[in-house]
Amino acid sequence: MPNSPRKDRLIKEYIHDPYFTKEKYPDPSVCKKCGVVFHEGVFQWMKEVPAGAAEMICPACRRIEDKYEGGIVYLEGEFLQKHKDEILNLIKNVEEDEMAYRPLERIIEIKEEDGKLVITTTYEHLARRIGEAVHKAYKGDLNIQYPEGWKYARVHWKRD
Ligand SMILES: [Zn+2]
Image 1 (tube, helix red, strand yellow):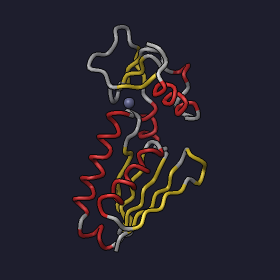
Image 2 (cartoon, protein in one colour):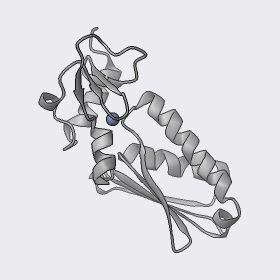
Image 3 (cartoon, protein in one colour):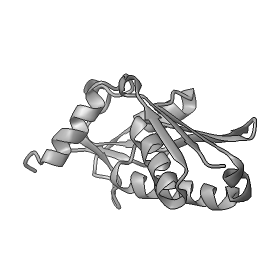
């Protein structure tokens, strides 16, 4: 398969990820935990695992194990208290959509802290997507910061 722009972009995204070093992941290989396949240089969902695939644990599963997040989302305000289930459903849907195209984008944990919902994600992209989706659906105030450059996102959303 020739190099596509999408593939190049995905590979670039992994290069700065301490959980991804190309040497560690034989091609093809399959994650023992979630079944994601590393094949032709990218992580992807495949109906059939390629013959001879080695076993590994993918960067997303390692991050989940270590609780090493790439992004964090704080949701707060009165509106949240009244629409919590609805908002949680939206968050789950965003994760599913995102995972279909970017298999390593996962939610690590959703917890409640002082009346806030706190969601940690494996990479910054999903944290941003969650913030944007909640903002688009429910308005309110959205603030996204990248305190350590583009590799970590801190997302705040609030609606009273
Ligand atoms: Zn995995």
